[in-house]
Amino acid sequence: MRQKVVLSLLMVVAVGLASAQDKLQADTFPTSGGDLRVTFIGHGTLMFQHAGKVVHVDPVSQYADYASLPKADVVLVTHTHGDHLDPKAIEAVRKADTVLVGNAASASNVAGIEAMKNGDARTVAGLRVEAVPAYNVSKQFHPKGDGNGYVITFGDKRVYVAGDTENVPEMAGLQKIDIAFLPMNLPFTMTPEMVAAAAKSFAPKVLYPYHFGSTDTSTLTALLAGSGIEVRIRNLK
Image 1 (tube, rainbow, N blue to C red):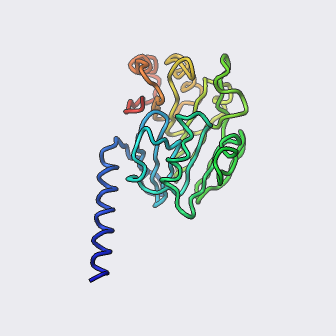
Image 2: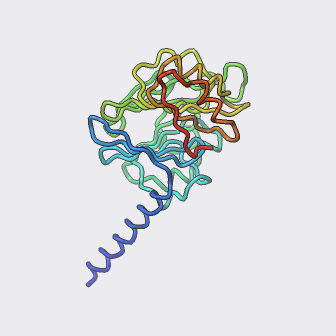
Image 3: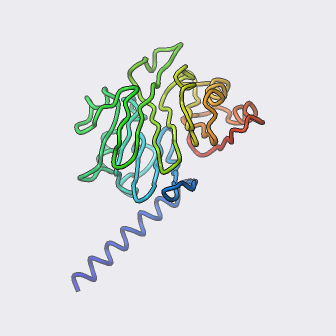
């Protein structure tokens, strides 16, 4: 009898998790290692699921009820601003073997975060993760050498999550990016024109503007018309 009760409770929890996840927008991409599901949680917050692994990027409680979302195998933190680093959300998705990765400053703020600096690359829970520069050129909201963007490899697909950055020269050195997330809101990150220039410098196959607030996303779509880059707009204000 007790076993049946436990099984029933587990089924209720599983259904609840599926229901919460299904309410969020998601896209699926085929990879050599199985489908990659990308869930658009909000602002700079994303979730990736691939081959049984769950990766949360910049989980923040404001954008989702993390108690109702899948637990993380990996959490990636780009920098310490409150709309990207939320210890409460991290704890909600953390399990005993979750690997937490972030920039050096976030590692100083949350116990257990392993620091990666710009240029570092490592295998995290079976996934290759590369930390790339994320900074402002003309402003000081995000100083050079502080924040990270990340390139995560899922099977044969390379996904670039830029973090808070402008169209920095280092972007031109990115290779074979299949899916990119570039921030687009002033005064903190980029204009549509800057995002378009950044995208053209490394030519991802699919581009999602994110962290865009009230910016008119149709401007970016127009700027990249005919470029060969597919622009997809999702609920990532």
